Image 1 (cartoon, helix red, strand yellow):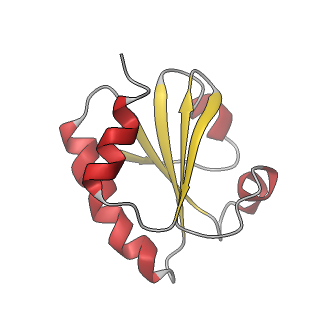
Image 2: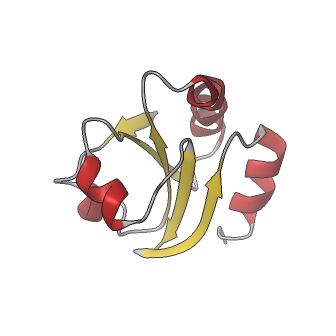
Amino acid sequence: MVEEITDQNFAEETDNGVVLTDFWATWCGPCKMQSPVIDQLAEERQDVKFTKMDVDQNQETAKDLGIMAIPTLLIKKNGQIVDRLTGYTPKEKLNQILDQYTD
């Protein structure tokens, strides 16, 4: 399951373990392509927490993190940003990247 998060709970929801956050917007075409990939991975992987944040509704976090383009996928491990991917990322590549951060 992919959990919808906000500016208010971003830090709390992404501080433990490996967390992928999908920064997206409803009007973004590539975001609409990325979303099913994130949903599939969330079903398949129990070792990663999957979250998403609508940048139109939650501008503060995106601004603080310097997110200028979407989709941006941010990967955190124990609260530290370990990777950032901008633009559509295929499932196979995303799986390989996540494997680097999971034990």
